Image 1 (cartoon, each protein chain N blue to C red):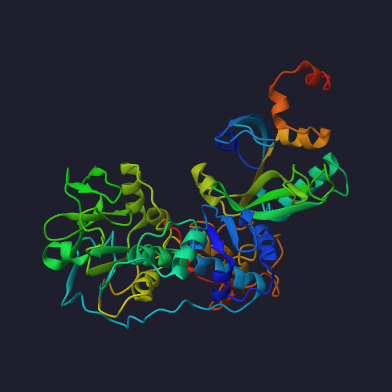
Image 2 (image 1 turned 180 degrees about the horizontal axis):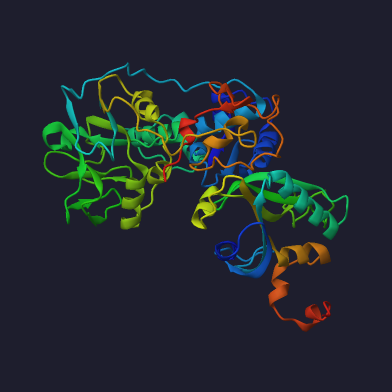
Length: 345
Length: 168
């Protein structure tokens, strides 16, 4: 994860130099592969996909230095949205594999990105392609949530259907490969056929091109096990499928859609995010009750994480300001559900 | 090793298990795709991260010098939670920075952590009081540091001039 330090500084107060930041985060568990004054390349371990974004790392920086964090600017979706707008209809036919699908429609003129945007992508090791593709990559870097842009005029019936593929159904993906799908792969289809592999890769037919005038931007939440299965079966691992390993946030999907586009959008979702039964700390014990220690991995409730002493009230900083202190069995423990860290197994 | 032993033995468990391990790694001064590793596992009631740290710091200071700096850094391994990488002050440059420690003054020497609850589930150790720690340390890496060998590849080249310096 290549991080442009000046960009990170926009999202969080960093009270030290880039070199010191690299050293401090290195010792906090984010191994530094290389660093200079402008860019630090972190090796993010498999348990921290939430740190595969600037926002995620900003959270760590804010915790490390107890400094202020700023959420990137985004448009607010509001509480409830229609499932269809004039320009686009969205239907979710598999609410388990896709509990939330947000789409926004925008008239665009395809061209090169402004230089500040292209430079930020280049610093992160991503090639600048055109303004629309670059925006989706920019939001991925910023929020850790993958997005996809369809050429709206290429979608039959201006209708996006989130459904399972049919056995043997074919899809030409963005990399030019003809893929043969099976009935357990989730796709985004129009009224005629599959147009994208959900959470993995878009399709070539609805790819944004220089002729594109209107786009539908997708920001959705797909079941990580489903994304992983599709990605594995096809031997196709992408930035998106990588990022979606984590439950990168139900809210993240909506925030992504609102991030850089105008407010015509559809937002289809169930009333509540999927439950996190297996991920919530079931009980806090003196040994494991410090700073959300139980919240990291499912089943990590068994003690032994501490030194055998009761938690130190002035101990580790809370990773999240909303963390609560609860009296549990005479021991004051801190319980925090870090939604962006919940892993699905 | 650890799983096999726990399947057939009840806690308390304390084992040390040496063996060859293989992984995809590029050959360089401190890495080879095949090396010897010693695994350690301690399981019992009330075993904590404090026991882990004490054991490893004690071991490393006994092996090197009583003043050797030992640092734990949070890390990730699938079978432990929490996990840590353990570093000691570079024996070659005494912390001032050289090629061996990539100018950090520290060299990674082992990985460790508290046994993941899912591992206990897998060997049907359901009692909540049972906890444990585990670590794995590369023998070549240790030998490299103890004897000031500059290149880990020397261990596998079977050059007699090198091997005869280590009489059995």
